[in-house]
Length: 142
Image 1 (cartoon, rainbow, N blue to C red):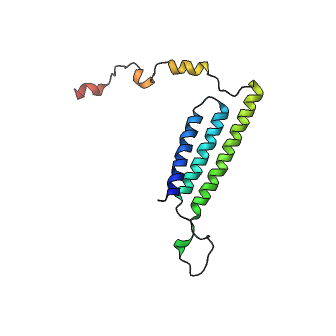
Image 2: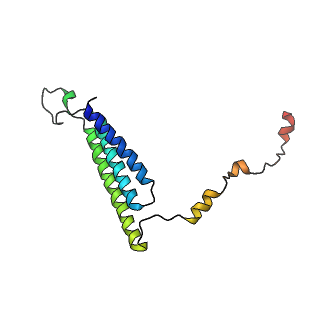
Image 3: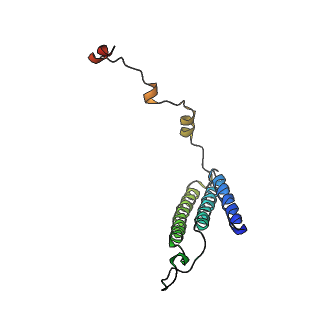
């Protein structure tokens, strides 16, 4: 592993950490920037996992097939870029719509969510009353 790979790995880790930190904020613009950082870190992860460079994947008679570049990581990187662009465009539209409606970039605390979070956990199966079974086969087992 070369120093360039280590630097890119460190940059990818910082981008993932910063993106996750920003996504957990309540400000929509920071969430957008966090999603952008996570997307770029994912593209960098795919780039680093693709291995070394190789020759262009054009057939040349007599060339060893191991000399060619692998096209699958290139396709995955392109797909990640397109999906990231779509998500960023959607979030940008949501932020713009929120700004038009309430002139605020902050996600408000929902009172109903707070009520649900404060409720004790209740599981229908665990907390249900047990009914006494009356079966003719229970007496035979005893």
